[in-house]
Length: 333
Image (cartoon, rainbow, N blue to C red):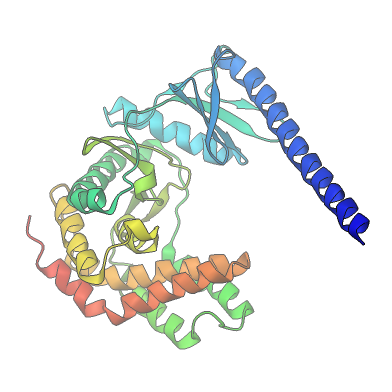
């Protein structure tokens, strides 16, 4: 019996060794592949460090990013070039030695940009100080988008169409297990009632602190335009504000703090662009529909916990609709 345990332990250790050795080999193979790849930008001797899935830092100066879909890469390149031409702080696209903005293999497409200074805000104290500035930053980006959106070919999307289309289909397919159908219908009906009166333009579509860089409290640059599209403009504000509640616990404000952050963010935004009365009235409905969208998305990929988290945020907004609109009433520019 003792021998059996000893033998099993040796087998387990050998299996672990094989797994580790396999992962190390895979890592080294990928590193060699990336080293050869960045040679097309004259960076073959650069040190490569992975910082996210499909994103690597090269020599502490450049960012290499891989894309599964060429359309996402093309969208990013277009926006960054146009914004830089307008003196908006977006990353500089570095051309390959062949003079192209990107390189495509059979599996992926790649581009290299110069690394912007700064880092995302990661501390709740820092986040609280930055909400008004974030409103200004989103407003300036929207103004820039208004100026250049005719030059760019982007998808005309509709939050309302998504809600009445794939979102409803996904929730219905799962028998309305994460959200009551009556709650869905009330939220979508409320949005639909005012949807055609909401201003529509090119937006970022993925506004959270991870995509905005700061250094010593000062904004240093916008990154990641993969999801940019034409949609209702308050989507960016509502998405950002809901993201404050969905982040890590160290970044999550309490209810009263969050309501104050709504007022500060919108005040910052209105220092650049004045929101209409209908837009302010629509904030709770847009927020609720964003969380329904997330609930449907996570349900579709069988991530029950995240779907339930989105549902909790939906109900939180539902319970605080009046408080949210009241927070917007006290905004003064």
